[in-house]
Figure 1: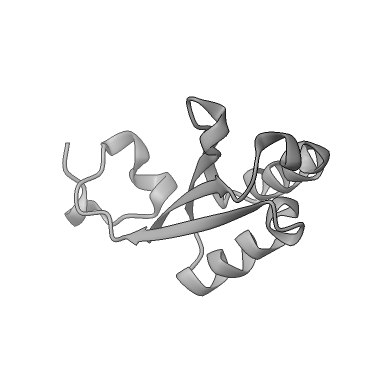
Figure 2 (figure 1 turned 90 degrees about the vertical axis):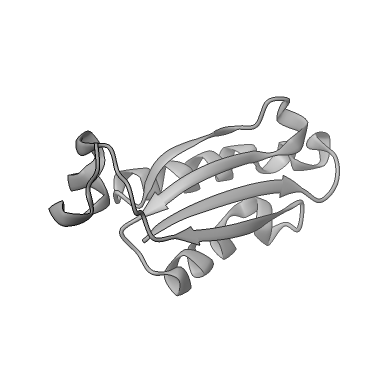
Length: 105
C-alpha cells in the first residue's frame, strides 16, 4: 500500500509556526523508520504540505498522522488517500515492496 498524506492548515501559517520544530522531528522520525518516502511543503506553503508513505497499513498511517504536533495542537489536519500501486517504476519496486509481476516500466 502507498499512502498520500495531504496536510492542510486549519488556520494561518503563523498559528502553526510555534509547532514547526516538533513537526520536523515527527517527519525525521518516520523518514528514519522508512515509513515516509517523501515529504515537503506545498507551493505556496500557506496550503500546507504532503507526504508519501509506505510500509504500513491504513490504520497505522492514521495513528501516525494523529501524532503530528500540528494535529495535536489543532493547527492542521490530514487527508489520507491510500492506493494500491498498479504500475511502478522499476527503481521504486523494492522500496514499495511491490512484487515483480505488478511492476511496469
